Length: 447
Picture 1 (cartoon, rainbow, N blue to C red):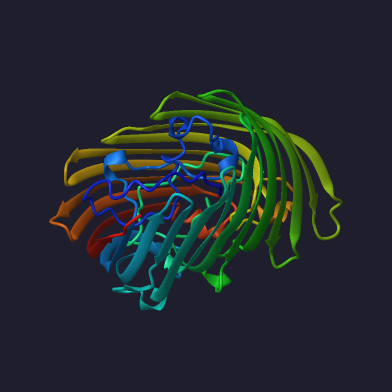
Picture 2: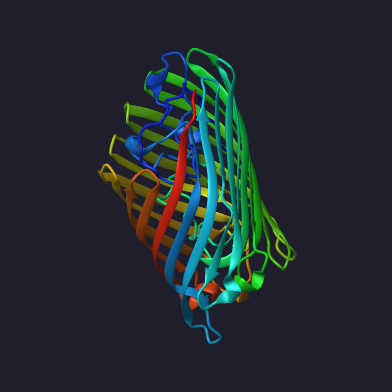
């Protein structure tokens, strides 16, 4: 789910050639932009908070180039006796991206094919495909339409040197769940959404959106215990502006969450009436809350009867985006898609991102996520304990040389504790050191 309010184009912000990011920026949606035009509160916008300081943001550009990344991973695969196998990977990827904003529309396009190959484990080598399109159009002064689609085909979720990897911080209940991570495995995932928002009065707005998510593993032997999954969700909301910096509203969310294990599909449907509140204490600060009851009904293959239950849903988020510093933090507790597990889960997700521009051409970032996945259905004790959690953190430095070259150096640590999954039983930890080089050409686009 993603909806934007469009503001006039700002042009290029600076000369920092940060790689294209796959998330939507919300820095345009501060209440000070237009005294009459409302913004869509974060709890129902579906837009991730910006992770870059305003000095590093860019718009109205066309960029093309070539990126190269090399990384050492201590858990690239599992040996015949269950021991982790380390390896060095190399990724090369041309890319092209465009971000154009006018008074009525905002268009973002990114396409980055590539290839990742391994020094020792050549069987893991694979071509990658990454495409991202986001479009928003103001049909009238008070009606905005938006649509987006993100597609990824990869053998390694980390090897994306052409995309910004400082982390994303989501803001609402429609949280795509990819928190069970198989670092080196063939996979395809896709997130598509469409939304419409209408401000029908000076201080009142309604909107609706739909989101579609798919996760597919072409080779299940690489991910024992994980399975394909899909999710469809819809959300409708009404928001009232209490003052220039306060929003209060109500929303209804529906989800259909399906997992496709070999023993038969498991389907969970949810319904949730939610209240939300957003306040902007300052132009650079956003604080948002949402909460309400969530009803779920889970249907599994025989002999299990449908499971019906009420559980609480809620979340909070904070964003601070200054000129050289950006910080975002969020927590969400909802029923969500399976992330590759055998069925839908009760998800507790916390994420944070911090980015600091140290000098004009040097920046540092730290990001982290924690996700606890507890299955909501009935499952045989013979399958073992399938609940678990994932913890991942990344720290990096980025240095720009001239107008065309960017070097990024970083470290990522991932720990996944799922005792019932053999995929993580022998090697729950992954440590990865990486360095990437990006050479790109930039061209400013007019309004």
